[in-house]
Length: 386
Image (cartoon, rainbow, N blue to C red; front, side):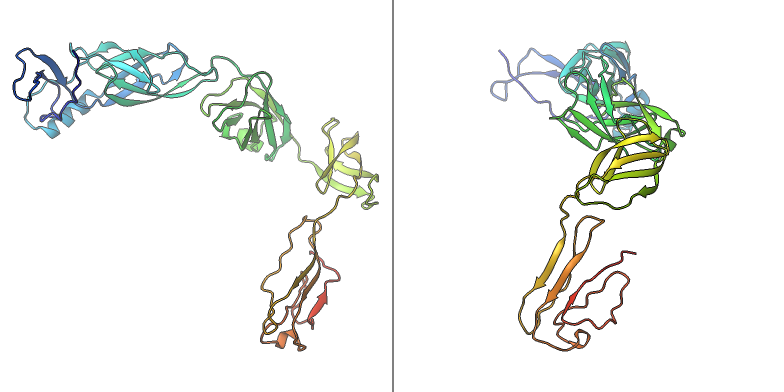
């Protein structure tokens, strides 16, 4: 009672809409006397679709570029009489297709235009889906554009920290207050009118990491509203305030040295400092609490000096006829980048500068000279990073 056929290419493609008979043969030769009818039509050319943003049940108007379709038909089949495509045709059954899966009826508003209502969005945070138009119940479609759903509910979140320097660059964590906050796509962060991609997401801890822009991009505002787009398209509309702080500087430390065991009460002058529980001092990579005295004066207890990973000794052993080191590099903390001993082993006794086989190397401290008469083994006694 049912078979399926794929339509052939129509010989007069490009010349408008044509209706042909459809007949069936069981033996490939004797076709049925009873017939059906099938309408061939050109590819639809979209002229306009509006609006492409809104909530569920938003009515979207879609119109065809009738002139472009007629021009295209005449270019392909000059002089061939044809009827232009018409949504009012008894063979047309227009549909709107959302996200390849949701097929909804389209209402014919003119021979070349229809309208349809957006179906419900599956995500309360909103998002964009592909909108397509079909003239034959959804079997053949053309892309119209992306319809972006607005959020159906506000997604509450907080910022940690909720303030940062005017020059920007503060790593700000947006954390959900209730429910799931992180999705599978990389979110967008919006500070005032400035939008950028999030730099990190953590599903386990439920946060989105953003980098604050300088306040200059928002007309040097002292504070801005921050929103997050969890879908990468539609923002939460929760609007959490982010405050810009004055740049902090350190004018002096007293004392500027102390026991490695820590506990030295260090007075810091500079500012402007804030009287807040977030006030901190960082010694190297160790962060400790600070005590507020006034906007220009705070104090901190120095932490215990941790072990500093550094290169203590670099040696090379190779064949006696050519023991050389091409490159020695030390990577450690910026404030303690030193090599205590560098040594090569060979049986030459001549000055290294005259050794054609390079048995060894010349070790030069920053600002030093290659003319210093260094021998096969040299200890680096001190260095000056200036």
